[in-house]
Amino acid sequence: MAKRFLSGNEAFAYGIRLAKPQVISAYPITPQTIVVEKLSEMVEDGSLESEFIHVESEHSALSCAMGASAVGARAFTATSSQGLLYMAECLVYASGGRFPIVMMNANRSTALPWNIYGDQRDSISQLDSGWIQAYAENAQESLDFALMSYYIAEQKQVSTPFMVNLDGFVLTHTYEVVDVPSSEQADAFLPPYETENKLDLLKPKNLAFSAGPEHNTAFKYKEHIGMLNVKKAVADAEERFAEIFGRRYTGLTESYFTEDADYILITLGSIAGLVKETVDKLREKGERVGLLRLRYLRPFPNEEIAESVKNAKAVAVLEKDISFGNEGTVYTNVNSALQKSKISIPTSNYIGGLGGKNISQAEIETIFYDLKQEKFKVRFLSVGGDLK
Image (cartoon, rainbow, N blue to C red; front, side, top):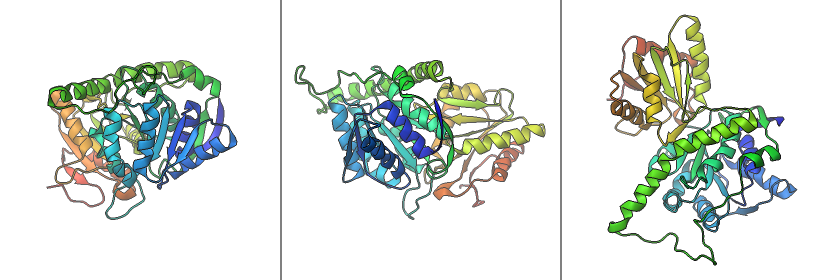
C-alpha cells in the first residue's frame, strides 16, 4: 500500500491498472479525458499490459468494449455527458448481452446550453439502461470502486455492466491523498475473468440474437434478476475488500447520524462530504439531523432507505437532476421506496448543482431548517421558486 496525491480521475486510473483489463477503448471528452490519458501512459511504460484502442467516437468506444467482452476479455472504457448519450444505443446492447464491462462516467451537464461542468443528469437519464450505477464521494472511493466494480459485475449470478460515476471537476480534477494498493493485494482480491458467455470456437454459441414476443420477456426477467443479485455481490465484495485492504464500505447506502435523526437529507456523490460537515455543525447546536448517502442508484436501495428513515419526522432529497415537468428522478425513487414500505413521512425535493453551480453550506442548512418548519416542497436551489 502506497500513499499518492491524486485527482479522482487519476485515482480511478490507478484502480483500473490494478484490475488489469485486457482491452481499453478510449475516446476523449471533458472532464473524463485524464482517465484514458493516464491509462495510455501506463500501457506505454509497461506498467499495464493491455490493448489500448483509440477509437473514433464514444459509440465506437462502447462497441469496442462489447466486442472484447464477447470473446471473454476484461474490458474498460470511459465517457461523460454527451458522450454517454451518444452511447445510449450501446448501453442496452451491453446489458442485454450480459457483458460485465466497467465504464467510468465523469458526471457533466448535458446540452443545451453547452456546459462542461458537473451535474448528474447524464447518468440518471440512463437508469433504465440495465447498468449497475454507483456514485463515488471522494478519490479513495473512486479507486476502490474501480476494483470492486469488476468483482461485482463479473459474478456469474450478476453478469451486468457497471457504470461508476464521478462528479465532474469537483471530484475528477481535485486532489487528495489516496492509498494505492499493491498489485499483489489487488490480485488476491480480483481473480482473472472467466466466463461461459463468450464466442468460443470449441463451444460454438449464438450471442446477441433476436428474440420475439414469446421469449423476450424471459430474457428481460433474467436481466432484472441479475441486477437484484448485485446487492449480495456488493456485500461479498466489500467483505473481501475489508479483509485484504483494511477499508470497509457500507453497501448500497451510507448512513451518517441517521439512527436518532428527526430530519434526514438524502443525497449522492461528492456533495455528501459537505452535508456531513453541515450535520456535524448542526449537531453541535443540538439539532438532530442526519445524512443518508446513496452509493448505488441501480440496484435501488429500497429496503436500506426505509430502514434508515423510518423514525424520522421528515426527509429531503438533494439531487443534481430534474425530470422536466415533474421532479427529481432520485426523489421519485425515494418516495417509491417509502410507499412500498408503508412509511408515511413528509418529503421534500431540492434540485441543485445544475451546470456545476455551487451548493453552499448555507443552502444545506436551509434545507434542514425548512424540514423543521414543515416547509415541504419541490424547489430549485438558487432560483427561489417552488416547482409548480
